[in-house]
Length: 118
Image 1 (cartoon, one colour):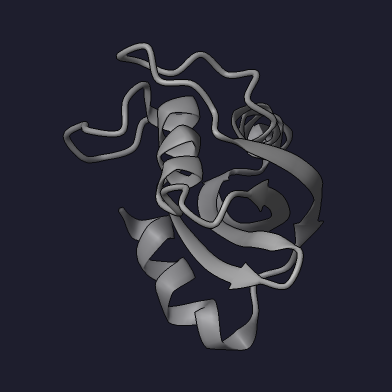
Image 2 (cartoon, helix red, strand yellow; image 1 turned 180 degrees about the vertical axis):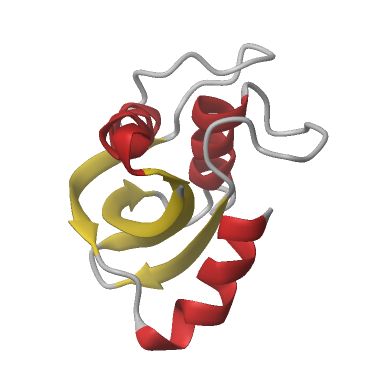
């Protein structure tokens, strides 16, 4: 049975870099490509980004079976560290500073439920 989870990271990202690229890398790691037909095969997910003082902060909200949680977190970390191969000769233009497991916040509960049901 699917459950919802959250994962956070901070990246070093240049001022002119595309803030959407790390989220696309996460989608590649979880779904095979950033452009794909629903549903997400391993973990329906949502990536939120925010510029912060020391770079770009990402919050990944995802839903998966509990036995897949560590696999999903590992893929997210590999994508954000630039170690997951990206299509179309794209390379990571960021550097992972830190990442950590998080919990789904109360204000994310509705979104998390939609991910569980997708």
